[in-house]
Figure 1 (tube, rainbow, N blue to C red):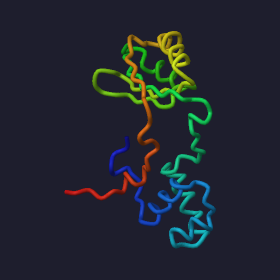
Figure 2 (cartoon, one colour):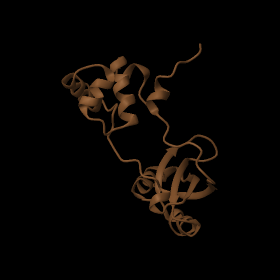
Figure 3 (cartoon, rainbow, N blue to C red):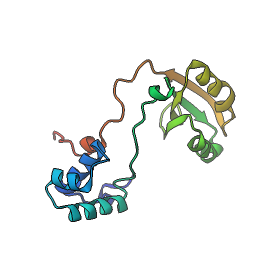
Length: 164
């Protein structure tokens, strides 16, 4: 994570652009410019600068997992042999069922978020694939019953007011 001083300096308009695009990445530059109160050309230049600074990493469609047959979500805490962490990370980056992987501190080295079609699909992953990833020593799985909140707004979190 970059140090605070390494963060790009974003003014009010930049923050409004990021917030608007996070809410609807399909906004036209004209609509985006209107929403933030500037003209289209400066808006386009600001978006380009935000992309160049990696504040905006890309644009994507939000796909409903259940609508495409992925109805089981699990979180897997994984313990990995010390000398095989990099190989493990490469393997999970390439695995299509792993939606997210975080290195953690505590009783596990990594926390994975996995999407599966059903319990049988998840069982197959855990019994035949996960054990074969480099360095895996053990893992503990928690199955999600239902999602309460997902895909929260990063912009709203980044620019929230704090009590001091």
